[in-house]
Image (tube, rainbow, N blue to C red):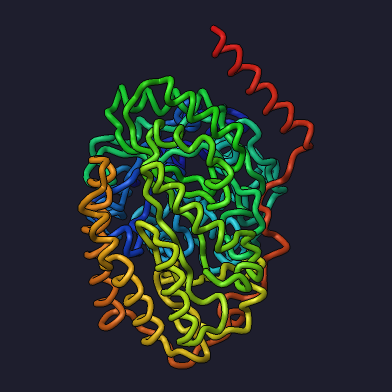
Length: 540
């Protein structure tokens, strides 16, 4: 009898209601996205570490395999899983839509080697596609829907004690062979109550920003803005933040104890509350640590904070990515972005004035573009004059409002691993895929190789920022050629494909909010309590 079978037999023989330690293995599947494959730097899987911390604190034996290194082949990962012989395997990935095929293949291979193994699956994609996943095959046993910290703890506790799963909120599983889903879990009100399992990784293995030791952190979850194409907003349901002083102290501790130099923010919009964000900046400055902060925000937040942008710089902010998405005001209104081209330009100017790099993202495919649209896009980007750009392709997720707007459009990419924002997945009526790609690559190279951009690359006064910009150019050059090669020789596209609705199924917009909203008074009380605590700590 194999190791997993022995452990399963011990579980079956355990008295009902008795909780015992469980041998758990967490696996981060290798991601097929180009951005994960080309740079030599790797960042740790924050979401999986956030699940691991509470499980360790509950007394379970928890280990992590990060398949991104190498990357490991799926067969190698399956063999490592078999060698570890866990009772429970936890799978999840931050890029869950495009990573799902790899996650499913790992689950199939692992169960072929360990038939008694039970697998828990989580992330944004399985949260919404739980019914399809459970119907497609037996490889996944349980799905965690929404935030996983408390849900995983309760699920493992119920499995360990042989308690009914129906009492665990926020999960999906099979009952009498049919997929069922329990009541949605309340969103976590106190994000500081959950410890990240940093001990699961070797910090020396992770770097970013040009071989600097780095981790991913998260000050807040969710976003208060109604952008209808965003696949993350509904998953977190409502914007919440950590205690600013505690968060700054954790960054300082990671820097002092583990020599972490770069902190990459996973937040959709950490600056949503100017009061809380300013408190964080001031707390981090008070820690007197020399660190680099990079993340994403909105252009209107930068303009709003113009009077204390010097605190951004002093705290260590070196770059903010701003999701400008499009330079056409009509498109911005259609996708409910809520921004304006005037604000976008001003945000870039203000960041440059304070010695902070700006990255502007622009997205292709929100409307039926013509060649003239791409020409206008290039002229607008030149007028914006960002330090860096990131080109993406619109990717309609089934649980977003944008899905309904795009449901009749034609799909030209049916390989789910390519639904990663870096590949064309939708056809446009007026411009064939090859010309769309040509426009995108031409705009990228013009923006980064224009004389003004090259002069800035050579003359940036801040040595740290200059290092970062040069690293970006080196990485961008490799990615650019890799994408060109992939489009020409690897990627397969359909000449005539199904509609978005026929490919994915009916809209899941009605289930966009993955978590229950607790009473407003409860959340307000928690925020007030945290504020009082931090003020007391600040006063000694």
